[in-house]
Amino acid sequence: MKTIAIHSYRGGTGKTNIALSMAECLAQREKQVCLMDFDLRAPSLGSFFGYKPSNYINDFLEERCGIEDLLVSVEEFNDRLFVGFASSEIRDIKEAMKEDKKKQMKILSKILNGRDSLKDNMDYLIFDTTPGLRYSSTNVILSSDLVLLVATLDRSDLAGTKRMIEEIHEILDMPHSVIINKVPAGVSDEEVSKEVGDKLSQNMICTIQCYCEVMSLRGRETIFHHQPEHPFSRAIEEIADKIS
Amino acid sequence: MEEERMIEMILEKMDRMLELEEEILEMVSIERKELKPLDALTLLDLPDHLRKSAMVMNKLKEATAKEVADETMRERSIESAYLNQLHRENYLLKKRDGRKVIFYFPKE
Ligand SMILES: Nc1ncnc2c1ncn2[C@@H]1O[C@H](COP(=O)(O)OP(=O)(O)OP(=O)(O)O)[C@@H](O)[C@H]1O
Ligand SMILES: [Mg+2]
Image (cartoon, rainbow over all chains, first blue to last red; front, side, top):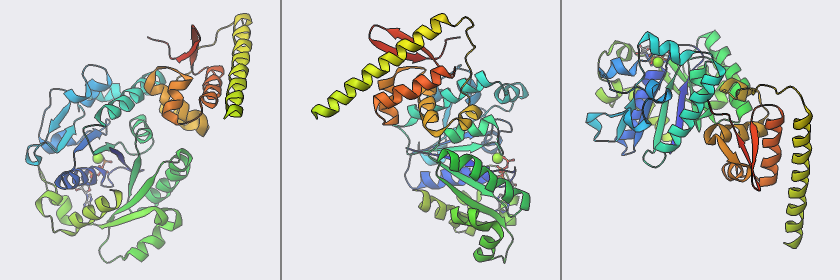
């Protein structure tokens, strides 16, 4: 099993969209995929699927259920795609985001053990994360084999992403790749490489253009599922090729 | 082969000596310090070699140097040195069970 964290420095760079599409893409390729909403600060998969599970990731972390009790099989994918949801109750968010070291140590240990118990049944475990340096993202990064960093061409985003790579991924010797998302139409890959600088362009595996259709799609379908020929969907396929 | 076994034996003896020294130091030290948590942000600040051991301990909760070494794919004697360092720095507790030395976190 390969464990992948999808992370970013700034919020709103497209992590959730990419995590979800990647999960769909790999499941379509006959892989067993588990997608976990580890953006415990602002969960979003629940509202995307319009689903209210009986157990959340939060229940697992607080030892109220096992990891298998929270996974929900997504119907269209014939038991190939499983999703773990996070609770969006304010009480649960506050609890999960507590900056208490002892508590976060327990949570890290739950994640490491949960990951290992999925090993035999899954080909991919994909974590959607909280942006920036928070416990809910570092816990997950430490439990992953690969981190996909999603950045935009925004200056502060690029600078922050570079700093994270230097101060976290390189120190941890953690394999990482960069995706530059929401690139304005007409900007070439060469121009993007120049804009993002050496460090990021060395690790860049894909650039994705900004498409209004991606933004305007609401409700239950990703553009990947809805329009497989769309350039956004092809970019996702390209990322899936490169990481598998 | 014979040499390797000798070296392993010597290392084990040295380990034991270091442990004894620590046990004595612990007995004579008056104040017992509180254990420091090994959370993600603390782990990020640890040197690489210690972090590997600490991550495995976070998973196993209670383990011998051999059990940790099996996961980190390092020599048992080296792992034992790292775990002892974590113990000295107050991240782990250590107890003896017959001939075995067990590293562990306190139960709540
Ligand atoms: N390539 C793209 N073109 C246009 N819109 C995009 C693209 N990628 C993502 N978006 C849009 O940007 C918004 C934010 O995307 P998403 O929720 O995936 O980001 P995120 O990184 O998960 O955000 P957060 O940090 O808040 O969790 C969404 O409205 C999404 O549809
Ligand atoms: Mg998100």
